[in-house]
Length: 499
Image 1 (tube, one colour):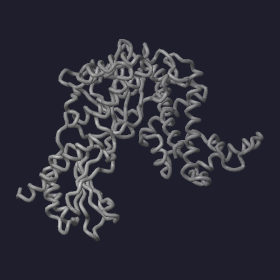
Image 2 (cartoon, one colour):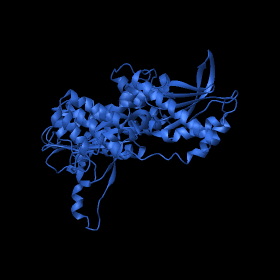
Image 3 (cartoon, one colour):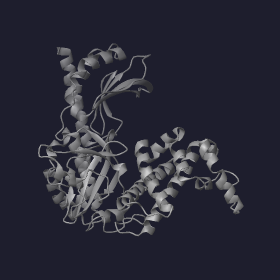
Image 4 (cartoon, one colour):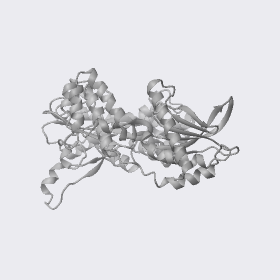
């Protein structure tokens, strides 16, 4: 490093030190607009309220706008900057706090290459490439997976704290490496899984975690946590949890649990990964739930160890996580086979009439969903876009209705969907021109949907022809699949409402 660059780096460091003191004493910056100090006519050194370092350089006339992410924590964008009542285009290089060690020498070298107090993009790109190899992301105290696990568990603990005493929720939190399930009491257990993308798929690390034979009410709580530069980091989530704990008088208990979960207060400045929280998925684990059968472990040879697998949560029945009563259910004594969960979910010993109503509800929900989706995609001309064979198939049914004096069927309406057979309804859903929109709504692949629909349709057609199911397993599989199909429609109707 030559003397010129060394002196520049010292000046830059001094200005950022001063800005940090100003931020603590009398902050004038916002989250996105930094407080700045002048180094020269074409250079400003800045710091925003998120403690991010800004290097603002005047851009040479005629250069284009750019926006680029150099590495996790350093980005470049062009911005309009007001200097002496004149708006000009400047380069804004933004670095997270942990990158100060790297941004200072980079800034000094870049400033030394400016001509006429302006920078051109070619010089900027060349200097970036020279420094890029030095910008390997520093290691965080906890891995991404560990951070997301901790954030997810804290979120579920706080949710539970609404329906059971907060002290109980905190004390039942077992966390990583401290038990088979993340949150567990003598009568219920919750396994928390974070997922990054929709539809949700999670890693099951131990087959025993989802063994329905345990004498507890067992539930998977999946939480959507995805990487987002505008999101919050682990210390932010920990602070929120501590604030909640302080409000409920359990802050000391939570601090003890956080230590066991490998959180260290003196390491908070070393975290830079940011996440945003999405929806929570609650999946009861019952005998018919389609997970890896734990009883098979008794037949696994000793040479096989540590079986793990991925589980698609959309293929499991889901409770509405926005319903507080469901949180009360999952933290109650007993197993999921003890009682009805919601008005259309039957227990192992429910009557055939309940099963009949479940099948009716599944069918009607999909007739309504198909109608609303076609209208959403095609508007008033929705009927013209229904496959020709489907349109033709209802002619005889409409004629039959007319003879019976049924009105309101002269032109296409919602009633047209009730005139279709179950097979034609399926064709209208999976047709190539419409499946992508249905897939976006229900969040599962065509193969998964077809598998579940076939099982449901088989039981429905058997039941509606006044025949008993062939076997008990046939009945239970069909009922479980109907519940899964109903669960798909919940999210679908919510998406249609938002649109």
